[in-house]
Length: 390
Ligand code: APR
Ligand code: PHB
Image (cartoon, rainbow, N blue to C red; front, side):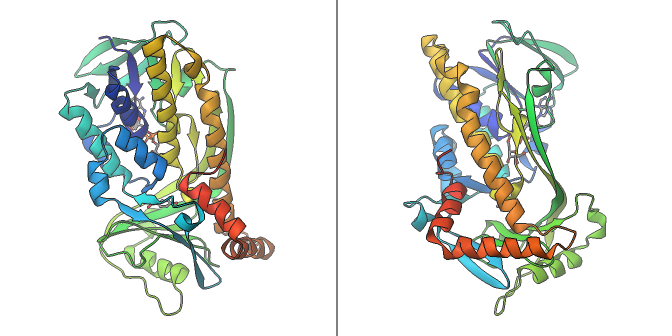
């Protein structure tokens, strides 16, 4: 087998890259180790920045998102039993966000690829990346009981944090930066209309809670919990009780409903620099991870592949390596802006387990200042909608 670009991973990064390249007549092969059903039902993020929406429109996969996505112009910050709206669009010259599940983005991308009969292989095994410093890198893998060899010009490592591409880079090349948090999120998908029109980020004495949604009939809610929390010890009733306590404000009730899905997601911050080596380019979670509090993971992955697609179109179109050689440098500005914002939101909203009253007072002071000061609110807003200067 031979292709221009071998893309490892059929998550948002790999799939969007393949669609963008195809729009410019550049062929690629996407290799995914899970099944189609698995990747299409993996509950993940749900907030798209305007830039991400525009990129998916450029990739030709935004029609259903345009019909079903929920356009939001603000979020709510809650603390000390008060709920305050941050008017995102008013503060950022009209920028908005779209609430549309990552599962739906992935379904639309997969359909677009397969409808055109373009190569996207699921359930591949034992992917190996070789000769990444040559002009003829190779990817080998098992599929349908046979070993295959894919020759290519470039390898795009879009295989997430646990993938094989980052680890194909020799020791000593990468510098990695990590921050562990003593928190995880217990998330539920519930068949009940969201009790708020906009997302609610709630700081409380019992810990953080987030009210989000997937549609007018589908709620997505999260609770701060310990990383080792056992979901078996969280029956639906206990989850709803805790959500009531953390999200409740006078005169407002959280509607309950059947829980369709629940799980515990750990959180970490991670960056690997540089995001390229030889003919291997890393994008998305393969290169960096952010805690979900800033809703940046999906948007950062899409920002990476937008830059990578532009660089590959230039390289295959003109032979110029300028954009490819500066790919990592051009990604990392926004990567670190997003890392900082995600760390800041997480630190401001999540209560430590040690009952540190001083830290709690600092958090509430930061929250109160953020909603009271137009300058502070604008800083949050431009980071949240993705227009902050890196
Ligand atoms: N071979 C082939 N595919 C692999 C391999 C491998 N060795 N290892 C992992 N994969 C696949 C995973 O199954 C997954 O489908 O690579 C894909 C990586 O996709 P994501 O993890 O979704 O990462 P990315 O595309 O960068 O998107 C980032 O996804 O994890 C969320 O919060 C994150 O919203 C963000 C988004
Ligand atoms: C979600 O809807 O899944 C979601 C929304 C906002 C976040 C994180 C997750 O910050």
